[in-house]
Amino acid sequence: MQTLGFAYAMLPALRRLYPDGSELTSRINLHLEYFNTQPYLASFILGAAVRLEEERASGRNRDADVRGMKAALMAALGALGDSFFWGALKPFAAAAAVAVFLAGLWWAPLVFLVIYNVWHVGLRVWLLFLGYESGGDAVSLVAEFNFMKLARNLKILALSLLGGILGMLPFWRAEFRLPVPAVGPVAIAVGGLAVTFGMVALLRAGGTPAKLMLGLAAVCVILTFLGAA
Amino acid sequence: MAILDSKTLFDIILVALAGGLIGLDKTAAGQFMISQPIVAGPLTGWMLGDAATGLIIGIVLELIWVMDVPIGTFVPADSTLAAVWATAVAVLGSGGKAQLPAIGFCILLTVALVPITMWVETYIRKWNSRLAAAAEPAPGEHAGRRLSRAHLSGIAVFFVKSFVLYLVLLPLGLIAVHLFSGLPAGFQGAMSLFVKLLPLLGIASAMRRLSIRTTDGFLLIGFVTAAAIGLALRANFLLVMLVAATATWVGVKYREGRSQEHKDA
Image (cartoon, rainbow over all chains, first blue to last red; front, side, top):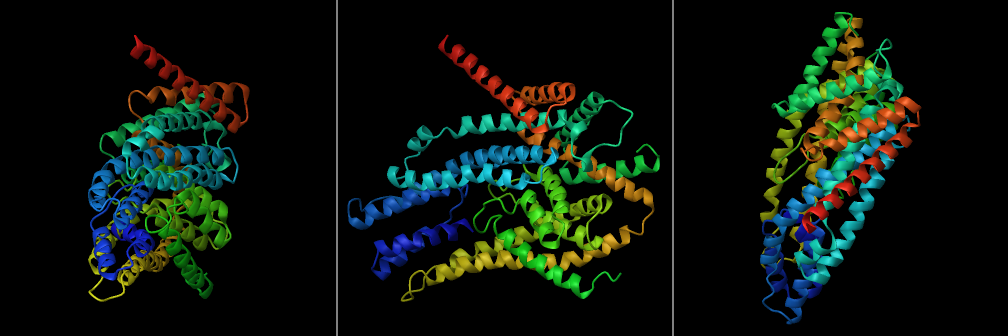
């Protein structure tokens, strides 16, 4: 799907650069070769591809290796982007939004969208221009933006927020308040942390979220029928 | 009450159309995260007159599936379809504002959707990958026309996939909720408890992927800070979160400083 998307995004530039039909066809075919990377960081490659196509079409650099540049960058940027956007920014935005929701506020989805898209849209536009200016120089990208460090820090903040959410378990909004009135708030928070660590252990032992959902439902049915809940 | 009256059928078609459009944001167009359960759930609920139910379902499913991401060729569970479907079934099956047991039951039913949606998604992606060959211009043909057609038809296929899945799965869900409402009261209570415990599973699911040995301490910093300030001082929830995040940031900076000193030495 990304192959088509990339070629489609290149189409307006290719049409302008290659008025000759046969050359345009051959360039479209080149951009229809396999392409897969992190979709947001594809902007960098897109900008670079337009720059190299421009140089090639104007005769400044007839040997500009667009194919080589795409092949070299897509795997590296894929790993970098996956780790930053999917592995760090998304869980951080989700943790912040969940905290807002559990505090009893309805605008949690907006918090999620704003936190995520300020980064996402901003970087997408900036990377397009950086890719064009640098001609696909990945070193300039890494020098301008330390994805690895930022991803690690966002992951840490997400973990901390999740810990904070667990610490505030006795004060979660009414729908999620646990029916254990005889126990104090500290015991509820510590109990929640212990149950969560237990679930993490089960997930690490090969469990999946779907299996754990089924198991949790079974436990809830048993507890209810035993009168423990 | 009939399970599928004309209003419900109209709502099913409406949800299928909206769900199909929301689903495009997942991979086919935009990726502005409107397709994430935390947004897709409330949007669906709002459309059907019960945004609160969508918000509860969306938050829970977001936490559970937040780290199930499309890295490389891996096809994750379709959390968008799960959120839209569960919200629509809960609201339509309750004939108004959904109660906690019905919400819990609908979230539980999404487990059954995971293998179905993963299989369909894989099949559609394989089918779409053939479109690149079909997009190559033929000699003498207007360059780019085939490419545009192939690209847009790829997007259309994603829409049709979701639309058809909703049309098939929503009535099945409504039948299941109808049967659930006839079960003994104990099951209703069990599903209420299930909803209350699900955020813990969601947090565990996110923690499992986020945590590595060197960062685990920060989870405890957040927990201890929140427990100390929130429980002892009964401070505002969001203020506590802000303090926990600030404490963590100080910890991160301290660690970076120590690491730099170590390098310099």
